Length: 310
Ligand code: C5P
Image 1 (cartoon, helix red, strand yellow):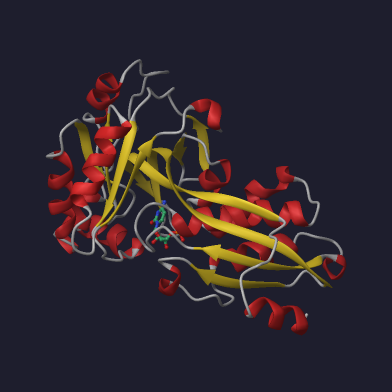
Image 2 (cartoon, protein in one colour):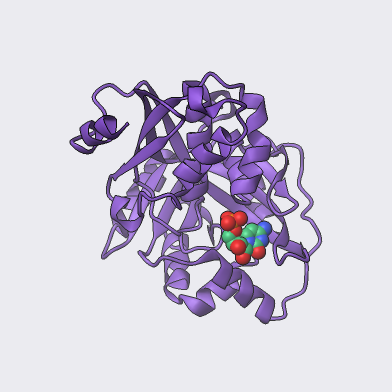
């Protein structure tokens, strides 16, 4: 294993056996509907997946024991550490712990190409953990149907990222049901370069004394983007006001997105600071992304994957 570690440290994997895109998760709305005794909040949220992703690669090293090593690269790789607390390794270890004879499992070398900003409300770490579960299960020849309960132990957003398809999230995020059919549209993501700690924003929401909300009423499908935007305007991201109070630049970002030609709705995702805009066409979203790629702002735009892509 040490030999493999040394070889691995010298460069990226030569021929990765397995690879997966860990897509950014966007909360189109997020209502806080209750609070559990353990401090977690109950939610009603509609999650979709944007065409922006980290990439995770996995290779068997040739040794056995079910150990894993991780190398980070990519534009946001410096924002993380590759130690045992990294969600990718925690996911692999959690999967290993469910196996009767882990000593027989091949060791794994993983490379995470981190292209999504860290602590940014788009579930990057959760998506990486979900991708790690899938790739490690594939590398070890394990069934995929045992992964959802493991995902739920790794974080509230990991189950939806494991499914990686549009879903209604309830409970603390782990109770998933199908999303309304989405119309064709494009999405713009903008992150102003501030890392936002999720627990801090939830606590600020609680301290604000805001009331719990009822679940949203959603149709079975939206025929066009205007109908969807009209319904979304009846919803909110409850974490947006406390996040703006902590990081006022988030409001600047939302206003900048909303002012772009063709933008139907602009809002913050998750606990921030990434905000999104929905557009009718990919060209409009991409033009807006180019205009807003100023200062340390990160932007990404593209058409939403349609249902057949999942
Ligand atoms: O589950 P995860 O580690 O992603 O959550 C990070 C933090 O966000 C939790 O420790 C908790 O403070 C807060 N959280 C919450 N309610 C949720 C999800 C997250 O209060 N449904």
